[in-house]
Image (cartoon, rainbow, N blue to C red; front, side, top):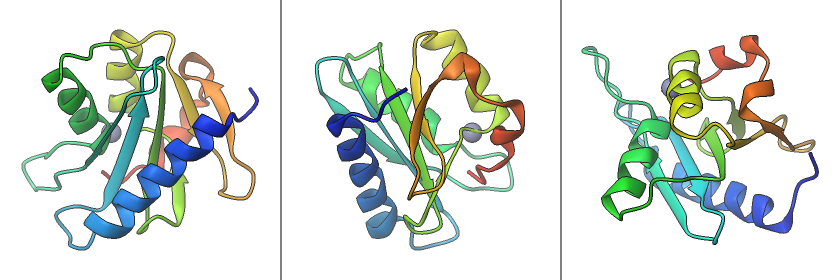
Length: 130
Ligand SMILES: [Zn+2]
């Protein structure tokens, strides 16, 4: 799928959160998601030995807190904004259940692309540490 300007803006938003807020071992991954009407929600992971929560799950909860239950596009950023990662297997499962039509931005930062969640390659799910 073609990257839209709004997709690039979403990547920038996630990268900005990652650079600003992922500065400790507690928070290492940032995610941002957009609704069809342009609202953007972001979040960082909560890393803990008990399991914690991935950034994507925090984003889902943040959106739900604002009454938003349908997300259109999501991107996840690690390594202080330098790396785009695919949602981990567990998050992919949650996202598939909640948002079957979700678009996911993946790829190296110089060759980003959008893929439907259902077409994400399984091995891409190992990249997210959060
Ligand atoms: Zn995850």
